[in-house]
Image (tube, rainbow, N blue to C red; front, side, top):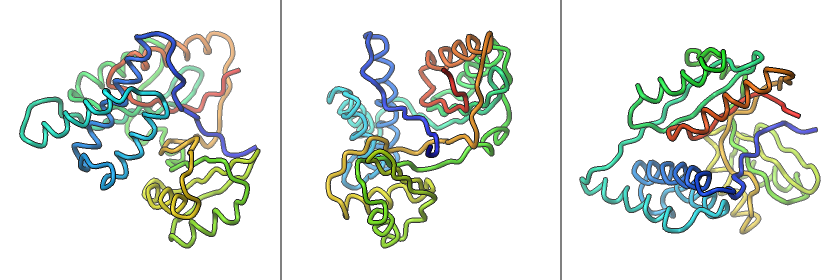
Length: 243
């Protein structure tokens, strides 16, 4: 059994409202990435990775193009949103732990909304670092391959600080520090050609998972649903193992 991470690859949403939320979150991330790092995906690796992920998750081209156009307008002195990242941590139902990453144009509003999700499910929002020390912040690249030694050698040649490599069921999982994410990805592409990454992102991996029963399960599902309903929330990481 390898290191457990959240495979958050978005499945195609079943309703128009769910699709709109997925598209909105990608659009916001692409806009922020293009505004901060440039609108050319060839020169902005973060943007290129986001666009690749969005396409894989069937986000329409017009959503991607609109987000980039907004970044271009902003760079020319136009109006529009000015999002900044915000991260909140705390304790969820049943003693679970959660980290919530947001992009917001109003930090006071976002904090209030996230705090409400905690308080309405009998949970407690914490201070920065209150639970993140119980997670590893890691770049994760997962793809079909069977030679972990060749993968390791390619990463070593590129001076990537590899945290771990797993070879399971014909898939290689590479774990590296977030600062080495782009270097690791480029090294793999240079060595093995056009790779279809099943997981290609930076996320928080819990040191240990907790299981839930009874009323805690219902409260936890309500907690996650309330966070998912917030436009400013981009990702939720937790250490809960359900089912």
